[in-house]
Image 1 (cartoon, rainbow, N blue to C red):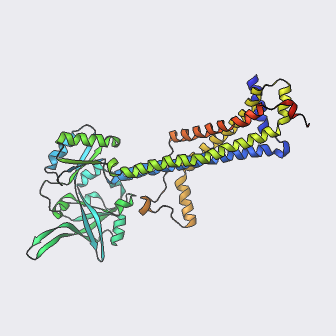
Image 2 (image 1 turned 135 degrees about the vertical axis):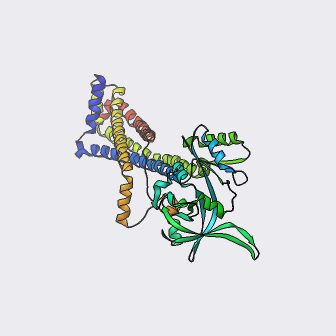
Image 3 (image 1 turned 90 degrees about the vertical axis):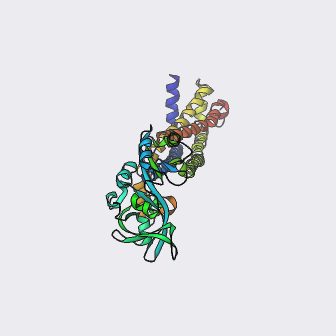
Length: 417
C-alpha cells in the first residue's frame, strides 16, 4: 500500500497543472532532451557499425579472406599446391592468381594500376566480384583473347569504354639489340565492375591468368600466389598460418584481410569508442536537466510536502515520491530515444539520399571515405549500452532533489502559509 501511495502521488505531481502547467512542460522538455541525446548516440554508433561492416563486405568481394604467396615472388606447380591447400580444414576454396603493378594507357591518358590475372571459373568461386560486374562477364577473359575488365573509375580515368582498347605496360623490360624495351600488349576492354570501393574501382584491372603470365614473363606453372576463401573469415589469421606451416612454412609469405586493412578497422573501432564517450556527455547534460526539473517540483510542492509529513509520511516516503518522478522521466526519455534512434538508423540511407538531392550535393566523397553512401547497422548490444548509461545517469540525477525533499521541515515550509 505504501508503494502504491508513493507511486500515485509521484505521478500526480508530474501531471501538475498548477501555475499553468509549467512543471509538466519542463518535465516534457527533459524527456525530449534525453530522447534526442540517446537517439543521436544510437545513430552515430549505428553509422560506425554500418561503415565497418559495409567496408569489410566490399573489401572481401574484391580481395580474399587470406593470401598465400611465394617468398621469392612466385609459387611453382600451383595445381599441386592448390589441391593440398583445399584439403586443409577451414579452407573453402583456393584459387591461383598472377598480379603485378603496371601502366595502362589509352590515347593521351596514362595511369598506374594493379593488373591481376585470374581464372574466370575459379574467380567466381573465390569472391563475389562477379556479382558486381556492370558490363561483360568473367567468361570473356579467355586465354589468348587479351581482354581486360576494368574498374569503372579506372575506365573513366582512361576515358575508355567497353569495346575500346588499352595498352598494358609491364614493369620489366625485354633485352633487344636496340636496348631494353618494355613489355607491352594491347588489351580489349571486355567489361567493367563497380565494387563500391574507390581504391579498387580506380586501381584494379582483371585479365586472363595465362595472358598475365605471358605479359609478366612467368614460366609455365608459376603464379604469384593463392587466394583463399575460408569457411569463417574471422579465423583467417589462424587458418592461413597453419596452411603455410603444413606446406613447408619458410617458402611462403602469408597475409589476410585483417592484416591488410588492420589500421583502417582499428581506426573505425577507436573512433566508435571516442564518439561513444563524447556523445555520452550530451546524454549526461540531458539527464542532469532532471535535477533542475525535480528541484523546481520540490520548490513548488513545499506546502504539499509539509502536509504529507504532518499526516505521517516519513522522509523516506517523500524521497521515494520524488525519486519515482525522476525515474519515470529517465525511463520515458531513454525508451523514446532508443525507438527514435533505431527508426532513424534503419532509414538513414533514404534520409541522407533525399537530403543530398534536395541540397544538390554529396556528403561523402568516395575518393576519401571509400564509399559514397552512408550505411547504418543497429547492434542490440550498443542500444543496451546506451540505454543503460542514460538510465543510470538519470537515476543518479534524482538523488539530490529527492534527498532535499525528504529533509523538508514541515514547520518551516508552512511558516509563510
